[in-house]
Image (cartoon, rainbow, N blue to C red; front, side, top):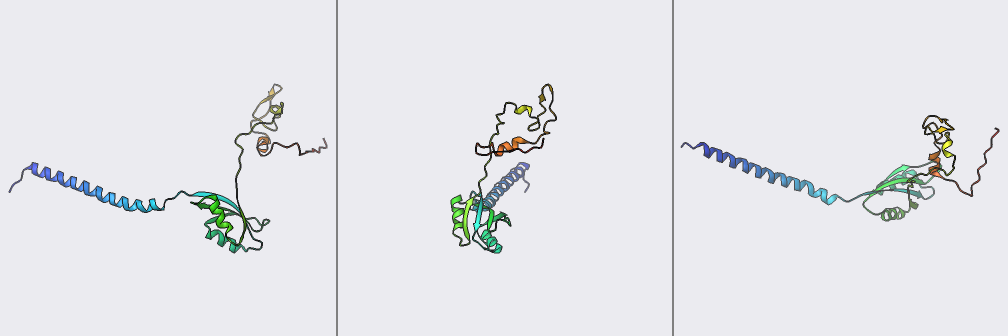
Length: 178
């Protein structure tokens, strides 16, 4: 029996539509299977930096074991600060919960957050002649109508100014044989 070309064209279109639908169903099932475990496992984690003081004479091997058990990464230790450890912990819990786990360990004397403070904006010293002191902060300014130097050729005093602006209680004496 001879079939018309239109019959074959419709049959081919049905096969293509069937393949498209079946492919999408299979892909959807695979995606669903792949995504479900990720959704169940996903929880927001935070990183906490801590200063941990271990009890006197705690061996380094015990410190490393405690850090490993509490999912902590030891960042720094110093020979001149025995028992102190600067550690980083990734956790889904709060800072208080993480610190409580450390405090519960019998080898830990205490634990504190290692906060980092930064100055948002630095103001220049209030000396009215500060801009003329090109050795302290040289941005290529003119001094008395003459070039003050090359921008950046200075002692970077503003970086020190970020750390401290001084105090009435501090007395500084300059000894100079001049």
